[in-house]
Amino acid sequence: MTPSAQNLISTFDQLPELEKKEVAAPILHRTLQLDFPPLSDEELILSAEEVFLELDRREAADAQS
Image (cartoon, rainbow, N blue to C red; front, top):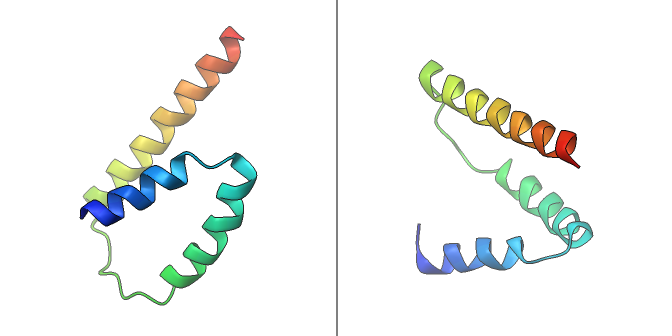
C-alpha cells in the first residue's frame, strides 16, 4: 500500500463513527465500478475466518462489560 493510501486509512480510522459511515458509503459506491478479479475459495475462507474471529472478539468484549 502506498503512503498516501495508508494516510487515507489512518485518517479514516480517526473519524467519529457517524462520519465513517458518511464517508464509507460513497467510497463503497465507487468501488462497485472497479474491476476486481474473482476471489478464490481459499481467499473467501480466510476472509470468513477473519470475520468470525472479529465477531468472537467483540462478543467476548461485550460479555466482559
